[in-house]
Amino acid sequence: MIDLATFDAVAATPGITVLDFTAAWCGPCRTLKPILADLAGEYLGRVQVVAIDVDADPVLAERFSVRSMPTVVLLRAGREVGRVVGSRPRTFLAGMLDRALAGDVAIAGP
Image 1 (cartoon, rainbow, N blue to C red):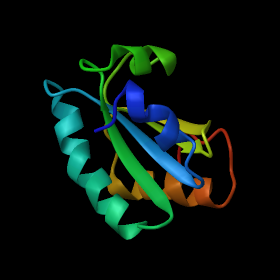
Image 2: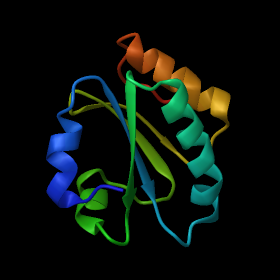
Image 3: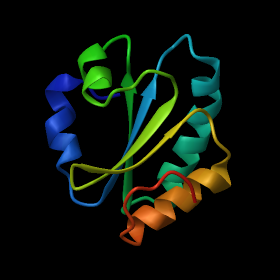
């Protein structure tokens, strides 16, 4: 988990950063968590996956206009290049990561 104090350093990291906006009470978030953990291992060194608890850090949720959980935001060098709301299958998310790594922007699906 990251918080507002560490966000800027994490977001400025070169490459792709996946922001997983989540909450402890969110059932779909619990479903998505192991999928993102698996993808973080598969894309190790190319993609960084971080979780943001919207209850603990509402300022970050507001900054990214997060209204529903889970929301996954893809950043490339600190700039948003993709977003999806809701739990999605592993292949869907892997497709989004592949597109982000290929340089695409405005990614909403594989």
